[in-house]
Image (cartoon, rainbow, N blue to C red; front, side, top):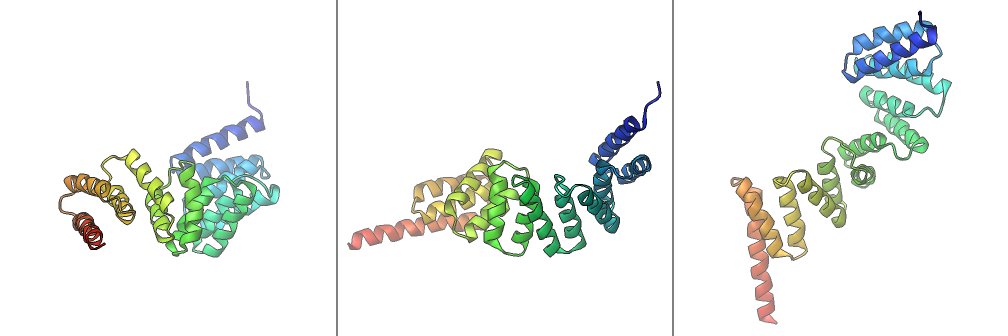
Length: 236
């Protein structure tokens, strides 16, 4: 039994989506051009066209299809997100930020938009703005590249100690041998005057990375702080 045009369209889009998932951009575009010939008003066709052309770095064409999606449905989920990614790849960060924020107005829990904004603000050293978006991703267990590092660093810069501690403990849940997390956790504990626990973490880290000068320097800090505390108590 032969298929009707809507069935063919559905199969073409499904195969194109699979090709996009495997970064097979040329194959995806070829399939989507066939789908477009069947229905040039299909929002799914233009949505996936935007993704495929973005992946192949044909950014002007990707933007054209992204805008077609919004003309058909201005509230289409992920449409503003895609245009944000296109603008970011074009180097137009102002427009990228605007589109990511528009996506968040439609879908406040779009973690990809939060993450992309967090990265942009982090790279521009806008630490408070970066942390606001990165913390959303952290709380949602979003699997973004370098998320823990960026969240922890932004929290440190902005003095958000409670968030710092959450990040370092989470990093150690993911990897119990994470010396970056051990060292930074110890640094917070030193500031909190919890010197024995800080020393414990640093000794664990030094066993894993014995030649790291930062670890040894922080371990020396715990001794110096303890001596200073002892002298202060003796003089009272």
